[in-house]
Structures are given as C-alpha cells and as structure tokens.
Image 1 (cartoon, one colour):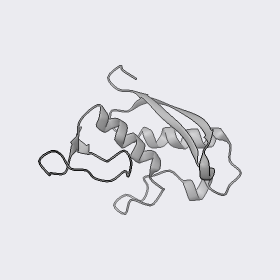
Image 2 (image 1 turned 180 degrees about the horizontal axis):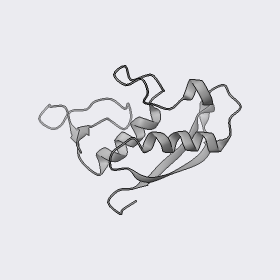
Image 3 (image 1 turned 90 degrees about the horizontal axis):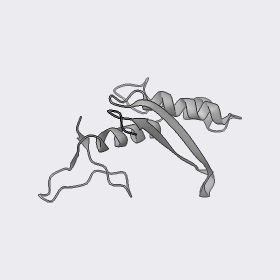
Length: 111
C-alpha cells in the first residue's frame, strides 16, 4: 500500500526528484503508517475521531504503567493494514521527559 512519504527530520511531506509529492511504497510505507498511528492522539483525526492513542485520557499526566503504554501502541499499530504481531520496546525517558522506543512488527514474514 502506498502512502505519502514523510521526511525523517520534520515528519512533513517531501518532494521527489521531479518536484512532485513523494510516495512511499511497501514495506517502508507500512512502517511509516505504524509510526504515524502511534503518534496520533485520540480524537485528533477529524474524519475518524475514534482513531489514535488515548494520550490525554489515559497516559499523559496520569500514574500509568509501562504495560498500559505498550498496549496502547500495539493497539494503534494493529490499525495499519499489513502490520502483524507488533511488539513494543521502550528504551527510557529521553530529553524533555520524552519516552523513546520502537515498534517491531511482522510484514510478510519479515520483521
């Protein structure tokens, strides 16, 4: 499945060599869509307010366990077609109180 390619540094649209909006193809597009799903706040998508991670409702400013955060990421990742068996690895707090980590998943038998 194709998706609009987002730049790694700004997470914004980028252009291809012809000056057109760049497109990402599988498997990169699936990985990018999983990352976008995990970054989306619940209610942020105006066309589907049920999509997203309940950051404000259950995570930010709440006494929350690591398991709750991981499950929220897994749930978000599973909304992306082509993402199978996601596993979340959290690597700790970064600068500015940000939590870092990664979501690994199976795509056509390859992680």
